[in-house]
Image 1 (tube, rainbow, N blue to C red):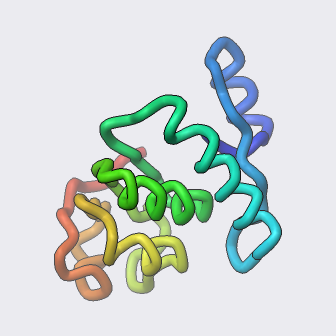
Image 2 (cartoon, helix red, strand yellow):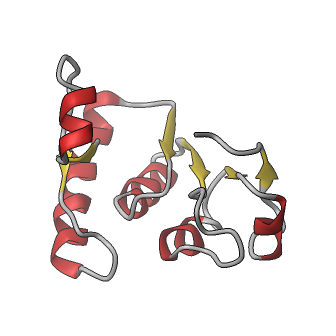
Length: 119
């Protein structure tokens, strides 16, 4: 599950992909579309863990994942060092594991685990 953008299309050309709707931040129609995708895909694939690297599409998948007792792992984005993202703030309370790339991100997410920069 990712956004249909040039880099994703080229990197995932030989993979099975479902394209999410974007933009996601503060876009209620796309939130509902992505919730519909979550309602279709999570029961079909039955993942043990739902992982997000910071896209707004994480919110409906995390909510459904929690309802279905799936573990959730969130990685806060690299470029938000001293402030949290909207998606991070929404997923923080429900994530089983909340990963940070900078020690400074602990100011916003004190229960986060610093794993260092992933480039």
